[in-house]
Image (cartoon, rainbow, N blue to C red):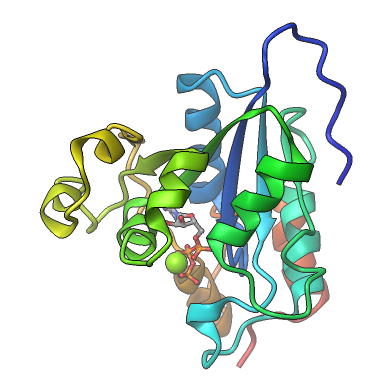
Length: 211
Ligand code: ATP
Ligand code: MG
């Protein structure tokens, strides 16, 4: 994924948003856009997961479908980009590998921000490499219905210095998940306005999520 040229004298501020994106929905897009504005991000890079380590046993749509839907969803936003870095790897990617990639060759010199929902950050911070993660990038933990951000302090034994690298971001609550969309498609219910129209069309065209 070629990053557009940096025309600023300062380092670029780049948001990274990983996910299964099966499918991408407006919860993801609103989150990324809010983070872009609040943290003055030049770009937000969406990174569809190749073989998500935590979803191995569940059924996940082929990576190409998820990548294409993500590309369709971000088409109209000049600050949004899709990266195939995880999809093109044969083995499962961990967040630490992806962040190392962007800090070394993907976007060297940039200030990196990892954008994640409150549910996902609680998982990430239980991983053994989290101190390095917090050194390489700033975390933006976004509120999500049913995952109150206050839980974060209780759930970790991070030092105050590391905690200061996690920024909490309240976004307009969107009780939407990919699971919810998949279930609705399986039941033949409309998903209009839950995901951008080209994604809705793509799902229809390829018969995704039908039982
Ligand atoms: P699934 O139901 O399949 O788990 P999901 O909707 O949780 O899908 P993911 O691809 O798992 O989507 O999530 C990618 C990232 O987006 C995670 O950090 C997750 O917390 C965040 N996210 C997903 N939906 C929302 C939402 N409605 N509001 C805020 N953050 C969200
Ligand atoms: Mg999820």
